[in-house]
Amino acid sequence: GQNSWAEEHRSKTQAAVDKLVDCGINFLAIDFDQTMIDVHTGGRWQGTALELTEHMRPVFLHLVPEATNRNIRIAICTFSGQTKHIRDVMEYAFPNIAELIVIRGNDKTWEYHGNGFKRGKQQHMASAAEELLAEQALGVTDVTKATTLLIDDDPKNIRMSLKDRTRAIWFNPKEPNELLDNILMLK
Image (cartoon, rainbow, N blue to C red):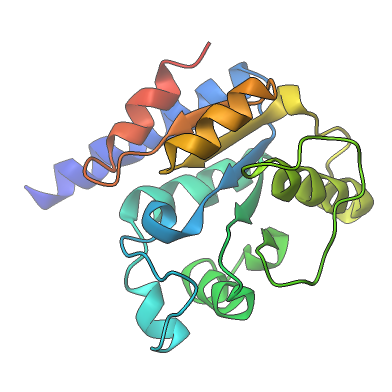
């Protein structure tokens, strides 16, 4: 029945988060379009943020709060400029923890001046990490490439990340629940 599926999903999510902790990961950088949500907005979503929230994938509705409970920080790293919408979606989807989630999109509100990689999602992640480190209240003392995991449906971003010595998992939009299996296989 539905209940046993939910139960199995919950325990698998917990196992995946245990694995992240074991691997020393304290920062999840998650893509938005086609990854956290099941549509591609192309940065041009016409509907409301509430309507967009209905497209949140269940695997993330479980994973994000579970990871946050274990002091793993979350950032949405997207090429979309609709960060206000994404912020609202986070408020709807995760009302208790939305304020802990950092958003980096192509909205011209931030620039990364470090000497890191500028391609793919690398500068989004670096800038988000800087914000997390600046916000002592979030309780993060050390976010580095070695403690970061990118989850993204675009193989190019995954390749860039791995090339930049940052762990990354390709998210398959057709098999969203494979994400947990892939986390469990992390080294």
